[in-house]
Image 1 (cartoon, rainbow, N blue to C red):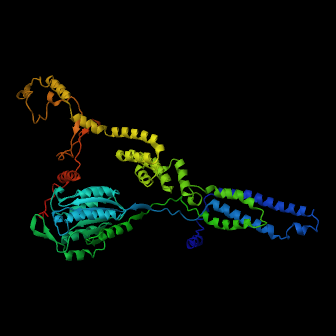
Image 2: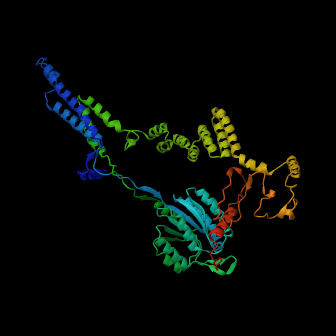
Length: 585
């Protein structure tokens, strides 16, 4: 600290020296008035001394020392002038604005080819890779993570997200059978990875989890690392001896020691062998966490100057200590100067912690309805949770209230869970609150009723879908009566429609024409997921349907099936011209 102060004082740029608040020099006027009053008071003091008998003067007054008045007055003037200069804001260099903080990310690329089903690593290489992904995320690399699955084609599974639980959930669903094209297409993987990392300005990491690298693969990885700011981490999921590939008894997948030795010479590529414990992924996570935050330079504003007035407060405080000496009767003169100096104390000051506690700062911000900033200032978890709740960050509020075992905290956590749509957990929290604090029973009863109404509103769409597909016997009978009276049944075909009767089942209607059978009674229809994209998907310019007139069907709960269909759609649309590899493993 002292070295920094010495450097700042000895490197003053006098050409740039100026005061940010020169109007503060008007305070010299009251200081001059106080000085004149002190000098005048000293004269009056000498006059009335003469009224005392000379014999009694030595017992009533201290020894006549001129410094008894001169020294306090001199120090008072020095301290006042220094404080006013500090308040004026001396500045001689531009404010050092920190660069914009940008965070690195990690992109996990999982090989889902047939060779990953080899059993030289139990239960097999792919299953062990999934365990390693979970261990890697448990090691907390602190970076947002994305996920790619690749075989003969590469497909993004998840964009960059801080939710590690979501990545684990989708990683478990990755299998070889969901990949639309067999093989191991590393060039296509690097192309997709480069696309996902294009918007990331910080040097990040690609975690490649594969079992085998060929000479061509090593050359492509080296070329990619030379042309990119990102680092490549390779986790080998195979043994040196290798194993036969399931379905290909004459093919053996094993590591190539020469290729790995050459690849290790590239400093931008790190190869980590598989270990039985979490040492391998733990070291990778530690390296990523160490290089997480980078600084990006920003343009400085010419009007921003660094206020160095706080340096002058140290001599002022040192001189203030003398005001407590016996015989220094001008302490009251410091009151107006101290009031002027303390006008800059507050939340917007350079060091607000000097004046207010963290909780008091948070309360002041909360009173100004700046709840997000208030949550960062509060130190007490309860106050911090309330600020997060009022700011709309219900996840953070619920997590903080879960740390408190009181009934009030459980009740507040239930309110936050209701906003998150986690109604079952909210009911459980309300029940715990009622058990721990019986005085909250009325509030709990009211909140449970509101929770029930909120859940009913949330389930209205699902109930609408269910009731629209299930009809009772009475509704079916009414439909049959309406069907008999339908004008389409009695429509007499004319012209080219004479070969069609009203009872004929038409599999394919004419593309043109204005038939009565083309009309519908309502434009409300049931939404259905397409199995394949339309051929003219890029040329279609049809008006999108009204979302309020679509009844969505319930989607399949199996993530693997969802990913399989999505990968097939992407393969048909983006990778239809990619030739299939001869090596289907």
